[in-house]
Length: 96
Image 1 (cartoon, helix red, strand yellow):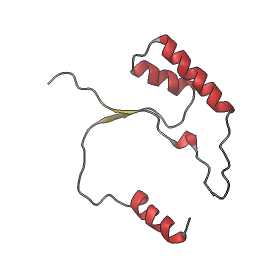
Image 2 (cartoon, rainbow, N blue to C red):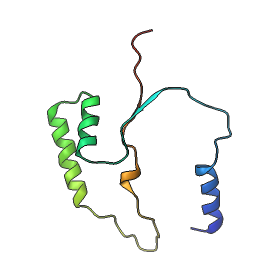
Image 3 (spheres, helix red, strand yellow):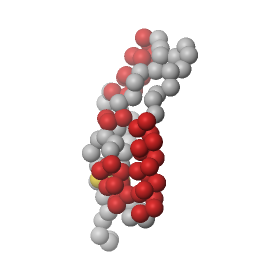
């Protein structure tokens, strides 16, 4: 990627938000990272049936066996999947 493009992307993604729109919605997050505990917590928060949790855990275990593709003529930096928040939702309020 050209240096100028990288600088523009950094300005947009790392700079302070200047457009004025804000949302003051309280949000609930799970910790960063992906592991069995996070998957179980997501499933519990969504009140999913056991078969869906098992499906998610099977998919996670399969995902652990995979490697990132190495594309020809592309220099894509490694993704740190443990720095991603996989669950965020507005906090629920108890009635009006």
